[in-house]
Image (cartoon, rainbow, N blue to C red):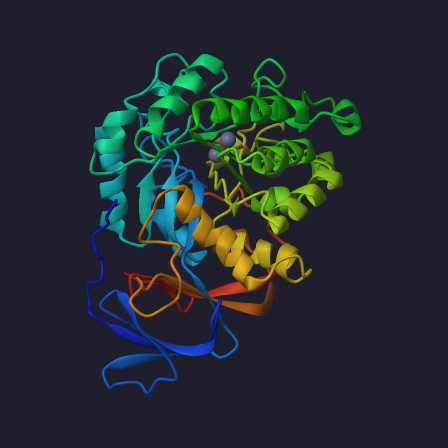
Length: 439
Ligand SMILES: NC(=O)N[C@@H](CC(=O)O)C(=O)O
Ligand SMILES: [Zn+2]
Ligand SMILES: [Zn+2]
């Protein structure tokens, strides 16, 4: 999959004195889309110097799980507004989920998403293809045609819905194996957690009178799918893992050499089910927020690599879909702009992860899982100039009204988080700088 170089102005930068992940303190010369030099550099004239003293430089972040809502729900997000939110969050590539209207289930639909993303040019928008036609769970979509299209689709998902038919899941895994693809599973056994289920099943769901969504509904699908991955010799990825039980299954599967990878969202790393006590629909999400024990297990699993990646599951929703009684409101919350700050706050400040490990979980491994060869590279001479500069000590309360997303369902509103994105570069071009996106 190759993306056109969106550099329009030939602008070059010297990034001065950043702490490079995996490389100590150094200057970077960015020109013509690549990192030309790393070291102690004098700035040639006609080059913009950016003082990065005290900033951490990470490879551009890659989000395996973004809902951009275009086509079909441009009142909630567009490829343009979602790309802006991604750039502001430090991302240089996002995988755009297929549950749009129409669904991304053909080569043409995938190419349209790719082209719209390139036209905006703030982040590489890589389409995810649906596993089944119209996400109906009945017939496989045109997986091969999507893979061979200009979009070069490698990640397939019915996200929003679980591929619950074991035979279809087996066939999808066999099919994508031929071209090194992967199926990203929304693990939710519908007989154990139906479309109404919206609160972690436990004492609280009973007290609140909300339909329960037990962890086992996720875990049985994770267990089944790792066995199908073993049987087919193909790759499966588990989206938004939310329970300690799923972590146990993943740990076992990896110990057996099964080709399974998994992601956790920022919200499942920090927020717990008690937040539902106020019936605020901003906290309604699929899978639901879980108790503290699960949150602890997810943090430990991310830290030890059992969970490979952090993925946002950025799920914008228009006010008229979200602002309802809890049981009727749409599932999902925003994630792109605060993901890195949440990881900084929860994982780095606590000493659970180093910056190298953050780079692995938010850039290197997601790029590998999605087969995005131009992303997730090291910050070294000759590599594409995809990077994010983070101020790790900046601290502030999140204000949902300063978001670049079209939607306002931001679960972090009012919360104090550590870590602020200072600048994002996509192939040497500043896509986010001085508090705004740049075209
Ligand atoms: N996470 C959510 O609660 N909602 C997602 C779908 C999904 O990720 O399952 C959405 O598309 O809104
Ligand atoms: Zn999902
Ligand atoms: Zn999703």
